Amino acid sequence: MKTYRVSPGKKVSLRDHDASDTSLVEGGKRDGEARLAKLGARLEELQDLLYAGHQHKLLIVLQGMDTAGKDGAIRKVFDSMDPLGIRVASFKVPTEVELDHDFLWRVHQQVPGKGEVVVFNRSHYEDVLVVRVRDLVPKKVWRERYDQINDFEKLLAETGTTIVKFFLHIDRDEQKERLQARLDDPAKRWKFRKGDLDDRKLWDDYQAAYEDVLSRTSTKWAPWYVVPANAKWYRNVVISQVLVDTLEGLGLKYPKAEEDLDSVRVD
Ligand code: ADP
Image (cartoon, rainbow, N blue to C red; front, side):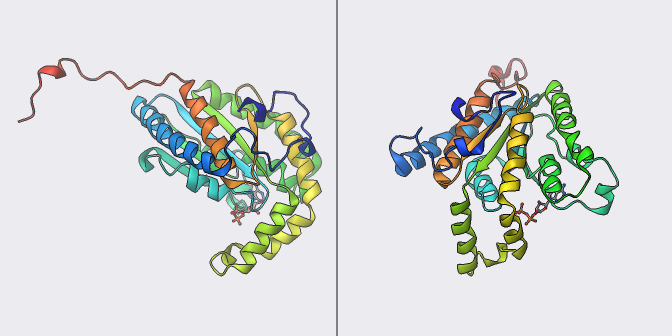
């Protein structure tokens, strides 16, 4: 999965990343689904260890254009995890109170505690994406945020948080199909907002803003992965595999039980 990780300092051009890539799963969708089931079982074990150990914290950031599949990935990748130890934080248009504070204020409140997994469904990166593309603050303000974000994430990492960030990469044609599907399917229509079409018109600006995010904020302590996301099953396999590899790298162990439990009998 290293092929999808953005090396710190590397200049990313999204044109060089094939959103339809499925090359790491040779047998196609059927093999992918089988692999996903195995990865899900492993994720369940690893999360149990994380929760029981009550030391490490895991923060997962999901970003992507509208319809890139953030919600779908959350449903499919994390469904094997114990709800006791996982939480999803969704970041919407900031409230008045949130806007009265620095942009990381609302984010810091949602970071994981010990033993916890938190998934950010959108994140502080909106403050250098939509905010930049739609001119919501002066350039001078958003330009400084890349360093501020790197520093913030470093603080989290230095205090026990493992951070993994996924950009779900779809192409423009795929988005067209998915938006159309939302219009056509009565069960999906509620998700369609006319405003999504305005954002679609700004596709190139968003891609450029994402390229800057990926080029400037992929760090040793909080790497970005560009996940090919045209094929939903492949997107889920890549995310799951990265999470399994990351959690296995932590050397998680169950905490020591109380002593002399062998002689204890439950009557
Ligand atoms: P989603 O598209 O994630 O399923 P919504 O349809 O409620 O959920 O969209 C959330 C909206 O909030 C998005 O359009 C996103 O760009 C916007 N948003 C999130 N964070 C910010 C921010 N910091 N400033 C302005 N808009 C934001």
